[in-house]
Image (cartoon, rainbow, N blue to C red; front, side, top):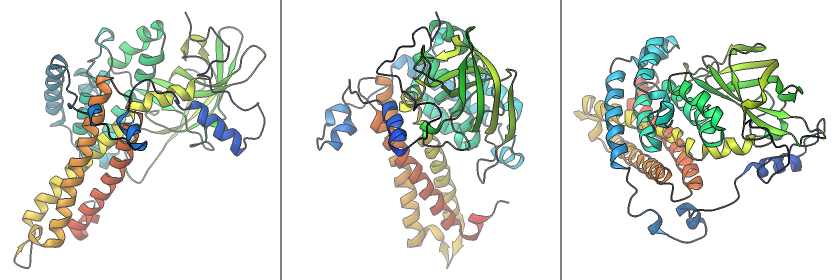
Length: 410
């Protein structure tokens, strides 16, 4: 069984504009809208709020993790804490490099397979413990958290687990659980939030393969990945409707060049790259889902995967609160600790309240995702938006509390 045995259009296929035709605003909007999930098969607390209806029954009683999962999850978090005690996050940031031994130790305790089913060698702990682990990892170094997050939220494990064939699951999930890091490549130099402009192509060869050609920008984990999820456009033909399609690609395939590692103002350790594909042969069996389903697969995968962003935001906020409280108790000005001055006390109160709200929203959304009784698309989006913006405000307030020292790097 392969993933591309049916080229007929379906309601879940996102059809591209005609090849070589200009992408108008109307066409771009159509491609984006067709990639969205429009159906609602389960109730949604946040959706009801948008419609002016308050449904507390959808969030009460508070969802609870299965006791067996909780026992295994707590044991894993204990192992993770032990590993992280020996990780120097400051050194990682200064040297812009994650030591191989850190990745190896995380691999040994199962960090790269937290959400992968046990039958494929993973821990099968779900979203709650996945996010709690990211909170711990992100507290040590956010780029290390980003590596783990990208691998499991948008890399190979989640789309293959949800949309892959049995053969794909048997091939790739054990490898990912065992530490084969995966990357996600969608963005291009001329393509950001407008997928209709995607230039990377995947041309069928007639012998059961596709040829990938194009350039990807900011491929998360691409520098060190063993496996890639690549979004590419399959041309329209008489036999195929084509469209943006998701592929699993071996990172060492002939024709793939990592042209350079990206450098950023922050997250200096993040392993993003500019990746070029030149006539890269990919088996048809490596298509995830079917031709034309790539964007929908990506967006569906991110329904719960996007919760990793607020998880890392909570990690940053908790660490900021710790630093703020300690500094405010130690630093004396005008005869008393600065934390006893109203201006600083108000900022500390904001740090505590915001961090509490972020974590509460994240925990609820993750518990709901694991319970799988409600649709959490909107809840996850709200958690990501609120968590990202609040984490930024928390960090800014910490800088103000620290004064000039808040701008120092050494």
